[in-house]
Length: 134
Ligand code: THU
Image 1: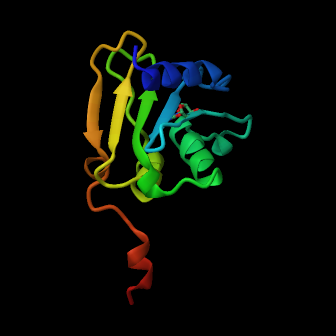
Image 2: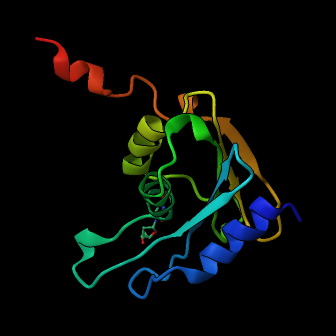
């Protein structure tokens, strides 16, 4: 199995999801050959839950990586049809990853793997450019 898939599935096992029992893992593939993983981390105060995609991306930015350093995000769930990123994550992915970068959705058996581009995740996306317009 490709390392990026193994790591996303491993990250899924690391998820802290005692409330939803929905375990999600993410793995960023970086241009320099490194990988960064993230898991969903829940909280008894439900609104504080963080998705796996955002855990991975915030970790990458915290480690000094920039938009152009990220080639792909692999997202792992156990679903027969692999789970899809939520709206909040689509917004964050759209800002922190290149529009041509890949989003790949997998499950443990690697059946029904779906791959699309960041630009296809969120049509008519809100960007920082709009903040400067009057
Ligand atoms: N979750 C993710 O980690 N990624 C998504 O894109 C969808 C939702 C998590 C958040 C929460 O911990 C659990 O899945 C149920 O919503």
